[in-house]
Image (cartoon, rainbow, N blue to C red; front, side):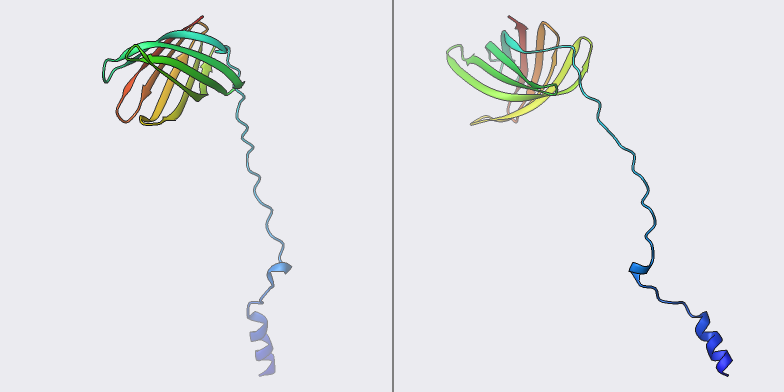
Length: 147
């Protein structure tokens, strides 16, 4: 009977403390490194042109100054006129979302008091900047040329 009891006890699973078992080696994760953006188009400088609201038909002159913050971001300062006499100014950071040898693709958004949040999607070449903008109550375009 003792032999049967010892045999039965030997067959029972043995509890092992967690710190006594070596953890399996973790699977190595692949390293993903984003490719640096090296745009061939540099927008830095002064630009001028027009803006047009496709919602209301309003339009006016527009000037822009672009400052390169890094390879992926430009600070844009826009100055223009509404109703031909009311000046406006605002700034927005435009993020580089893509590029090819002849184009720089950008996007950004800015909150304008009384007008809401505007979203921008733009394409720039060495000589032209074209942006579409949308807001809750407006949509339109900027067309600028390098000065």
